[in-house]
Length: 97
Image (cartoon, rainbow, N blue to C red; front, side, top):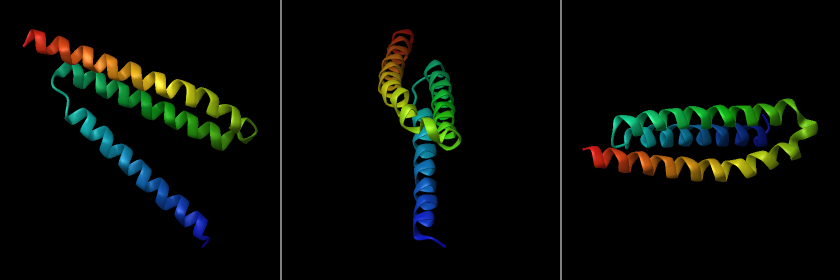
């Protein structure tokens, strides 16, 4: 078996495992029900978007360089939006409690 293939598979498994652990703790460490529901939705959207991006990389090799443009542009904005929204929800839940 090719060492590059083994490295790719093992590295991918570590990446997915790390993402799953990060997702689990992001949801677990929420402060209230609205924040938890938001994190579940955000994680679902994030994992779905990542799956679409990876499917595009594998299924559309002729567009591979161009697929990185929206991914690299939208990801930082999505992270910033999600962080701000989570903090806003957390602050609203603190005011209510």
